[in-house]
Image (cartoon, rainbow, N blue to C red):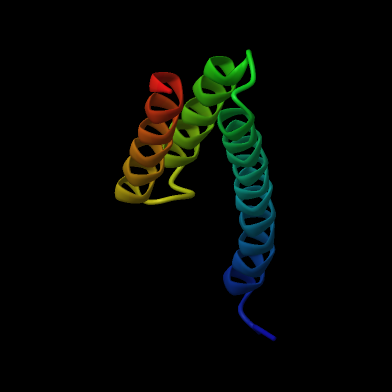
Length: 88
């Protein structure tokens, strides 16, 4: 347990930031799962689901929750799957 006031404040801030980042990551995983399910089932709204997932990934990237290369990889793989499903 910290004794210095600024370090006590940092502990509180770190918990708040961790909770915020966890919420963003959790939502990101949910949106990605929905998009993947839409792609796999060839649903009518798969383009909207993919668009929402890409938007969520970019949002997480801009907030610093995920690394930019991770975001690029996730978007690329999703687009590849969506294009493959559209071609069939």
